[in-house]
Image (cartoon, rainbow, N blue to C red; front, side, top):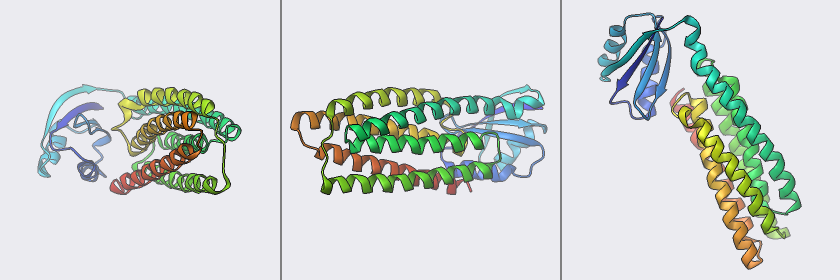
Length: 267
């Protein structure tokens, strides 16, 4: 078994990835492919000659440049990336579910729509990481199903967040600004750590791309809650808290649709 890294200059969007996946589908000589869209590189695990791979790419106008080839064991093929991904996702799942519990409990106590929204966003992320963990090392079809489920869950929770924030406009609330800012600062630190962990996997399978999108959205949401908490502190109004709750709902909603779009592109 060989591992070959190929640079493909024209591979700059998911449509090329979809084309290449279709090109090698059913090719017994190619065991596995890992894509790095940012560096425009494909890692092939294969039994066939490298010229076979380069020839097929050239036939569809995606001429590749062979960067590296080396012999690997059969076990390395599936385990090499999958074990690393699984370990990363377990850590992300633990961080997000812990922060979900913290933000929900404190959000209820602090009467903060922003913290509750961010907490439910963390719950959505926990679903994402759990489904991504389930999909790691499995077929492309299973990864697409995991991403579709994750995107659907994100959309459902976003609509619930939106409903709760709007409801509080009418029933009223008195958010505790200090708790809003302190807990959101803690969540921001947690999510920046998540981004650092998943950064090198962001151009991998669709399930890992979904995880990257969610983590990036969380950083924006945490920053928004901190800013809203400051406005609540200085103005004494609950409006900034409600506004950030709605903004988070929109961010979560967009993230969900982005995941569904990616899953459809790779279907």
